[in-house]
Amino acid sequence: MKHLLWVIGLAALIPAYLFFVKFNDNLPGQGRGNLVISVVFLIVSLICLGIFFFRQFRAESSEEISITKF
Image (tube, rainbow, N blue to C red; front, top):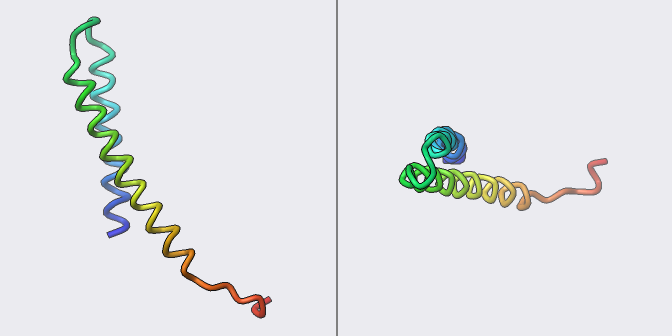
């Protein structure tokens, strides 16, 4: 599950970038749909990567470190 979140998060950045470039290439006042789609993909990417990192740090914080190992 963790790796799937990581892959989806990174994969969603690609169309977000491409739609933003399409928006940037349009004349002023046009192409607002491309901006909206780009922002939606960016939000999906941030949510997936945020959940991934939250789960990763939560799993690592549950491990106990013993001082006597050193």
